[in-house]
Image 1 (cartoon, one colour):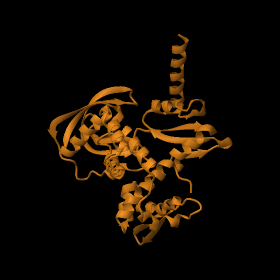
Image 2 (cartoon, helix red, strand yellow):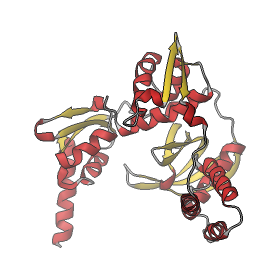
Image 3 (cartoon, one colour):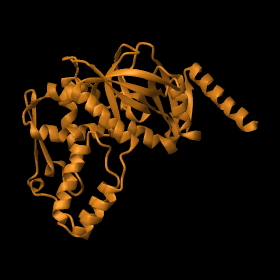
Image 4 (cartoon, one colour):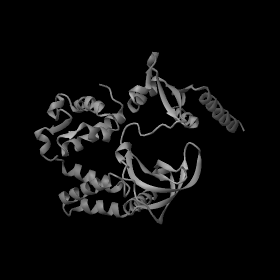
Length: 323
């Protein structure tokens, strides 16, 4: 079974959840995936079959049992033994984590901090540990780390924040007042989910597009109906009523990457190894920018307004370089 890379990552993230909660219902799993219980019951066992590594079979790693509306996974016995790495491997891993740690407040920061402590304990008080501490002590908190720390504080204390936010689709910087509800890690990008006072509804904001974050004194109460699980799914973008469908055709050189990163339902295979991706969007300029990232390997096929937008952008480039 061929799965887009984003979908595969989401499925594999479920394994710890299934392991910690034997007998979890398919409805609970479906809520986490953002799909129907019927679809979860059909697809999860198949996805877990991808865990096999030759010459082993998948069941040598993970066994999946279903009973009525519940699912349980069990790991092979050799998973009960801790992984053993050499001293050199442990030192290299510790140095890497110290040199490039996740931003404070990022969803994976706590797990990484725990791993660092275990590695330091295993290495004792030798030169490697002292070198790793020196590398870590010279790093200053990044701007992204400071923003994440403020947003985490706002989440914990349920306080509104003022944000200078750059909107890619409008190519404009605006000041927003947001009630933070959750921080979501989606394929390496951290998003803030919260109610935006400017738009008057729940939206997502990329942290790396925030130019400034200010914590206010105004407090709020998070809606009891809010569920962060709705945002932990492959199709992170939620289309609106004003969206249009655009089509971009990719040459064979880019087609493999597009297949891995796209839902199968949005792909149309074409002759000669080409593939066409259909996306719904409220910004034709976003479609143009996305296609331009792939150079000659991408062509905007529709709608006509999107092709006109591409032509206008290229005319601007020609005029600029011609001048």
